[in-house]
Length: 258
Ligand SMILES: C[S@@+](CC[C@H](N)C(=O)[O-])C[C@H]1O[C@@H](n2cnc3c(N)ncnc32)[C@H](O)[C@@H]1O
Image (cartoon, rainbow, N blue to C red; front, side, top):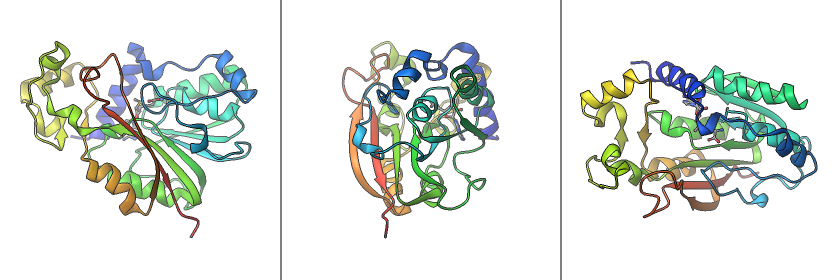
């Protein structure tokens, strides 16, 4: 199966369904960002520390990697950055273009797979903002390698991703408060789910998910050449497990200036 194409269609559908991650920021938030009052989340709730970003945002080249939906891109553009939003879903990218047209922002949108950034030259960006989205690709290490390549020396990768423990449980039972350890890690909707459940998800065009190990998430960034300089955890209160643990991780990773 072509996972990239399936998840493209699934995310286009999610936009139609009004996913929380497809609802653009308001003009009031954009105006505030223009005045220097802005915050960005790339996990469900906690804002990234301001000092994770370059001190001066004007003219900084930022890539929102798998970050469509009209959320991070417009705020960063209003804060003064030159923003490129890269995403697999045309409907998600359309959200960023809608906000750009509505609020008079310059945002460049590019469609593609986060594991293949060959459309960008080496050392094209000062900062990459990568909200929780690598759960939608089967292999995460190519994403880190490509991120490293397209960053300039001294650039930073700000990434959100899932703690793989989230995928240990039968999700439908866990949503009802019944935590049954069911799956081995690393998790994959394709390989781990019973075929009948997988078919039900596919019929409903639900995005396919993959629970990468922390070795691939954090070790993978280090192996790509990054130095991890920041870390926090976060939770999504609407989601199962949130009363027990933070299931989301954020890292700040630096490409050394050498
Ligand atoms: C949860 S949304 C993240 C964006 C959102 N603005 C946020 O704050 O979380 C996940 C995004 O990943 C994108 N995506 C899924 N698979 C992708 C792939 N292979 N390459 C690039 N983007 C992908 C989806 O289209 C979607 O926009």
